[in-house]
Image 1 (cartoon, rainbow, N blue to C red):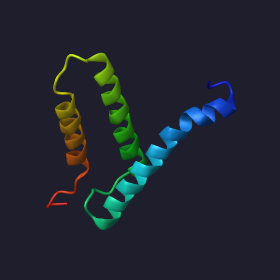
Image 2: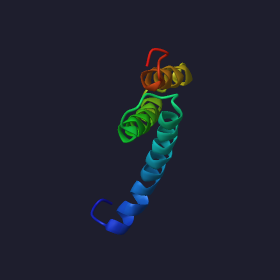
Image 3: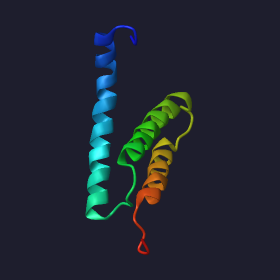
Image 4: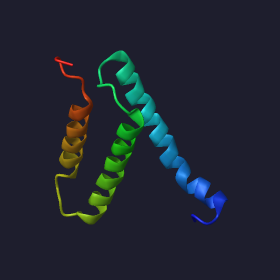
Length: 88
């Protein structure tokens, strides 16, 4: 797929869509002051990477009954790192 530009564009399009979506949301949070100032692109990549990793984990670790809880706690940990503290 990576050798055929047309196929590659179809394959990568959803990734780019979600990356731009999350980057926009993170930029908005930084602008309004609810998130720490920083590189929204890197933060968006971390969100997408976590989502893909959690999907893969769900397929590989099918016996884990707490997949939803794992996803929620993982995302909360990431958001806690991005959240602006009272002292900031």
